[in-house]
Amino acid sequence: MIAFKFLARGAVGPFTGFAWPTPMASSPGGWVEVPPEALPDRGIHACLADHLSFWVDDELWIVELGEVVQRSSGQLISSRGRLLKRTAWAREVANELGKACTFRARDAAAQLLRRNGRVQEANQLLGCSDLVELKKVARAISEPCKTDSLANIAGYVADAATFANLGDVGTAAFIVAELARVSTGTIEASASERAWQGRWIAERLKLPL
Image 1 (cartoon, helix red, strand yellow):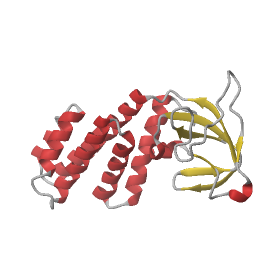
Image 2 (cartoon, helix red, strand yellow; image 1 turned 90 degrees about the vertical axis):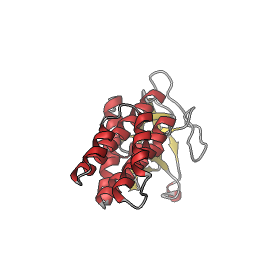
Image 3 (spheres, one colour; image 1 turned 180 degrees about the horizontal axis):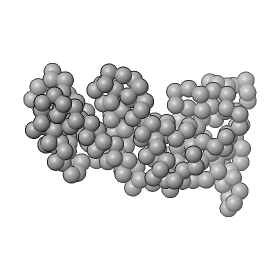
Image 4 (spheres, rainbow, N blue to C red; image 1 turned 60 degrees about the vertical axis):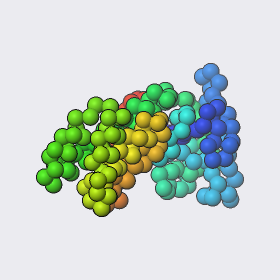
């Protein structure tokens, strides 16, 4: 099964510190195996495109898994896997994702404000053209009344813009997904936002789906 795996620089597992065998020329990396009795507590973890933004790190690899034994929390768990190819994921692409997520959140927040008669504030958000300006404007809307639920929505946008501008794309993506959940009251909205983020990565990098 073909799936995807984010790793720290040097093809190192961010949680385990395990250095994965990398492909050589036209050959895939060597198989990494976990004893079946160790599953599912230990295993080879990867994900599908819809869950990519949960695991953002330095490198994104296309991987081959053996038989998948469990699917949970946005992960696939197998007893064996190997790296096939490193994708074109890089800091520049990560920054693009952070900006795309944040401005998508801006549009959603502006739509919600407009539906509730707060057209001026909606237009202020929509008039922002970069992350620094968006952070400033969204914060100005959110700070005067912290008990105002609509103003609080703008606070999520300000936070997302802050982290995206710092290059902390994983946190920005999480905040945007939380905004979707809070503004709709449904976990499904958060999952849908995460799926959009994953598809953005897949389409931007032309990943095999």
